Image 1 (cartoon, rainbow, N blue to C red):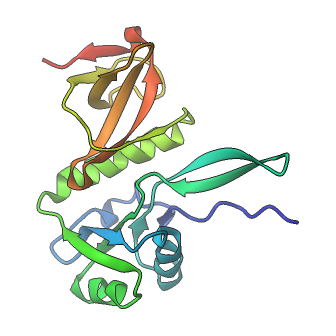
Image 2 (cartoon, rainbow, N blue to C red):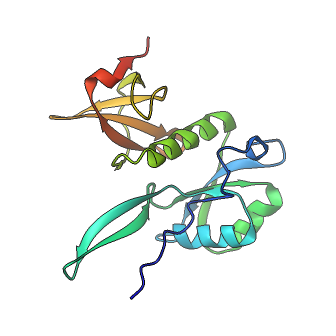
Image 3 (cartoon, one colour):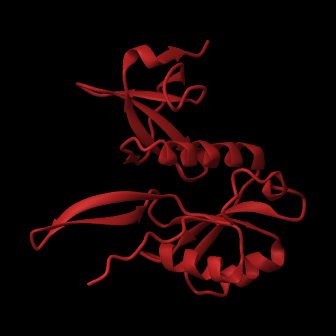
Length: 186
């Protein structure tokens, strides 16, 4: 049985590098709250129609029938982000895969959050989805592949986790970092 390649998590390929794809008056980022387990199906539809979107996917390794398999799961279950004008928003709703569209008032903040989440994913570090986030200490990473990123530190019994949160959906992602890599933001 062939192993399927991971599905695209964003479209177009230069979504995070192309300044023409930043939010504008005509096209704004919207958070799509999908029906259960419809995120990837919606992403396929958006990709086929050429609609800019972002669906952060993380690898999950599990043993199935004695074989180690890797699947790619949405980092934020039931959420997908789309850059659309009003007509494209209506076409997205017509797919039947969207339960609710969350309009975003602060476009720049969401865009920054999405870029940071993408940077976490491309760093190659193991990522853990975080549910509802409690406030913590604001920090900046001083060293390593994520240097310059700002976020929240969550302390656990044995590790320190750096959290990037997407406030609009009250969820986030985290990676483990050493103390020397972090400095508090004053």
